[in-house]
Length: 446
Image (tube, rainbow, N blue to C red; front, side, top):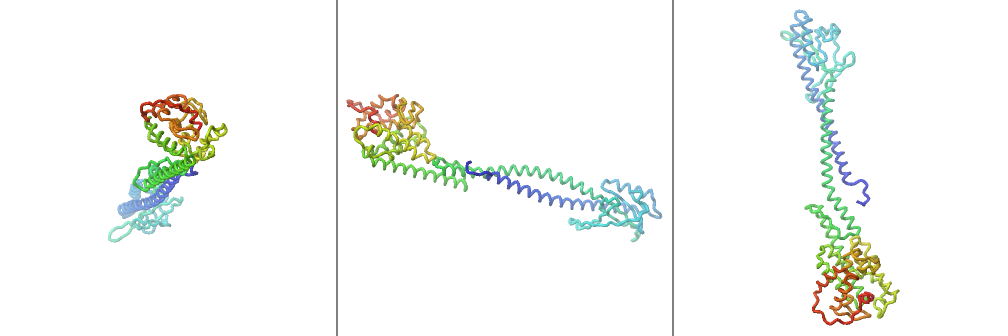
């Protein structure tokens, strides 16, 4: 936008939203995984305790009156057929292993679990057994009961902690997919929201920049019933009032200029009125009509820089004096140039002394290369000059001036502009023509 912003607010908003989404997703994911691990531990406890109780209830018959190895092996195989069960064993009342799914462990002394973990979900402590090869198991035991309170021993089943780890990893993968999907959706929503929020801000910033740089014709097109709309309306009102203030200032300068030249009082007002009427007759857009009106008001503003002695000189001007007067278009452009919205006004002012045949000044433009607004003001300016008293000549009659406009149509003036102006004037019946100065003579006196 040209205001020196390297990292736009939209990008900052999107990144902030992305950070918040990532932080929320990260914390939520951590808590979800932690909760899932605890729930999985609860499920493992339920499964392990159930498997231990089931095995214990069937082992009583296999141990009385003496251990039935084949029956015990059958029970252990049935228990470990569940892939989540890592081991199953039976110990007698002396603590000796009388049955184990690993035949090498038969007859060995049972080593109790050495560690515990607390599961806050169901407020239980889970025993952890470390096998000789270092593998970790959740260990669940149940007594083998017979008769009235008699106990023959215990059964123990182990579920590898790795099972929980594998399920956690699977859950983490699923969570990652969901998180990525949510992240994408969140990012898309944040970009959309950033666009919705930033669009009016950017429009206000562009409007403030253009108005601040002097483009007082610019208006912020933002129709909203909120603070943004109120700001836009305020900016537009400010620009409108500044434009009016500047135009009024120029009008005051034009009036001050006419006060220097007693023979040109009312000249600016008449040229402005003629120019606007010509533009309306040519059916130009309202915006263009207003531009022409502004240019007509200030078309001679550069004469502030012209010596008053030359402006009011009676008699023929010298070449040097004539060139000095011609410089008023340069002065006028110089005065208005700081205002960016005056570009077209400056163009019309600068070229309003060009002639249709290319013999005018300052650039020698011809035909339609001359801006239309300048061609209109040129005609209005010349007509008022011919019909006004000047230091070195008397005003010519209205019908004589109109005849001179017809005569110079296609050479000095644009024929289309001449036709439109003559329709505006609606001349009365032509009186007897008097001897009048030529357009060159009339313009020379300006």
